[in-house]
Amino acid sequence: MDLLGYDFVQRGMAVGVILAVTSSLVGVFLVLRRMAFLGSSLSHAAFGGVALSFLLGLDPLIFTLVFSLVLANLVQALITRSRRVPGDALLAMVFSGGASIAVIILGVADRFGEEIFGYLFGSILIASKTDLWITILVSAVALVFLALYYRRLTLITFSEEVAEVRGVRVSLVEHLLITVASLVIVLSVKTVGLILSSSLMVIPALSALLVAGSLKASLLIASLIGALSVVFGLILSLIYNLPPSGIIVGLMVLVFAVVVAVKYLKV
Image (cartoon, rainbow, N blue to C red; front, side):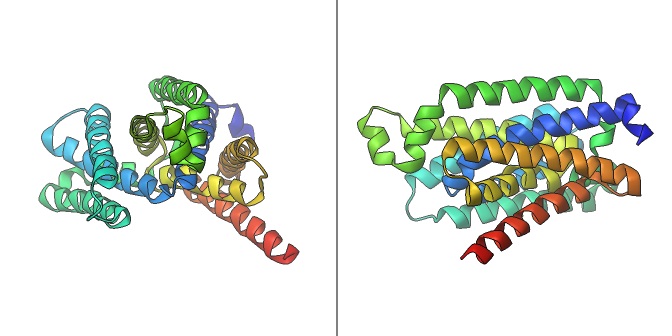
């Protein structure tokens, strides 16, 4: 427990908690919009973007951010405008395509293997001061968006028809939501790895929606589950010398299993 006094541990915990809260809040709206698979697809696409940036010799964060933003908005536009292409099939293609890009690049230029795999599993404990400030900035942007567009997001989540009647530009709001989600996911992939980034976006939201009685309660519970999972997961990983990402995801899954069991027993 003395390790909690070290700067790198405190910095890692701060980054993890901030990302957990932001990802969970955005994830609630994605899950309610039946776009949960989009989070996993974008994280895998971001992983492919990271591998591509190494091959091209470009900055991984900037290139992956641009790559993911363009891809995410293109996918959203296709889902919205094309009825011939099922949304889930398109997302599955993005999911597979992102992973395949990384695998191909690893095969072509295996000298990047260690750097690329670092983005796959990640580690909160190696987060730098720059990572912390970028996390704060991106999270602030996401939270401002959620605060300003909360009513519009709520309307389109529960009734797009009512939202359109009230003058809400549904397509614009959806593209903004996808853009914010992409920002958070790309940052999460860089800081905590692909596996944890997609889990933070979906699992706390699912658990919260099962027990909460309102949207605001869902947002609060999801952010608490995400934040507490990061805190206790990091502590357990330090005590037992285990990978932080695996422990954190395991705790979130455990919370979800307990929630489902309680709901089942009540029925």
